[in-house]
Image (cartoon, rainbow, N blue to C red; front, side, top):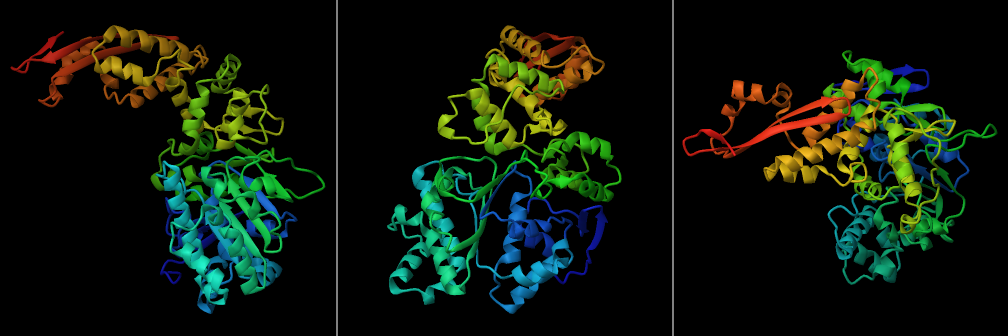
Length: 539
């Protein structure tokens, strides 16, 4: 409730504002929940001003996943939507009272709580669907929830419209798919008729595979019902769904061009700025800003503004441990699939990236069609990597890995994709280990190490750190928990009887020593089995 005993307080630094509350909240991206529970909130409310004052009919904002998009969209929804009662109006106003937008008197007067809003998120639409039929079931559920939210409309509809409305709420399986995909267009018409005002449409994760639900007819000739729309996603997908029919749409990727004769929009509204992170770190005195920068900073917006991944910063504040928190699982499978098919020049560019260098010999495709991904694989891969957040671009169009957190994911790919390791994978090495085939494991492991370490400048002063990093990645990936034993060698394993702590039901054991020298790795080991008397004997 808003009437909590804890009273939030505000800190400002340059243009940044943070409303400090009872710690950070992890895993909840709903604006109202964060504010009403009095958790710490980074103020992005001036996004409302930029959105409503822009000349765009549709703003399409592209950012990596876990970049604060859903929280911002839920904030916009709460700001503009017409409340159902005076009590709800008071609650909404209370939510914004400590945020910057509350000082914009004209906007508060003209636009606060003044619009019917259609707010839809597609990010859960394909979860656990698997088949077309299951996706359609989830789509029916989604449409039913949206229609049910506006069930007050039904009494003012014609009998025929009431029947259609009720079928959608009831998730009637006989309601045709062809009509279901135009359900939002009809809803916007009902809302305009009821309020005598045009709608604001907000779509989260528009580029979900289920975007077919919004065919181009949704926006075509629909300007009489909709005044503005904001679409949020990761990729700009052309000639698909509603995008093919949109007019007056403006795209806002990270690398948007900043023109002198116009005010750039949304540059610092998604992701945390350096000033915002500096304010947040006052919660954790043990965290040094330089280390935090190295791990989570590095994304560049509009060629000059440095941004941190908010998902990772929130988790860092919660756990106080520098580590990788963010992995874009939504695109990893697609990326790995195409990494296997990349060219040799792509591999050469990756070598530079993993050495900490930037590359200039690649281009990001502005419009991407999934049906054409195989036509220019390298271009498609670079585009997917950039939009997914694994690369960033500076003002000179140099492409590079933004930070250590993202670099750790690149390392995982390098050791797990056959393209980089001549067909050897973690899985094949595991098979060798579990099958007791030491010779094959030794050969494959040494090959992977030779290939992998070629991506790093192992001769430089930190070469040992790089080699150890790769080795840790292997151990974690294969669930090998004997790193210390391996370092000491087989003699130490035997001398200190590490195997004595194994469970009595363990019957077979593979003891390994793995040593690094420059770009080479040496693997020694032996396979043992336990006799009925409990004695270990080498096979």
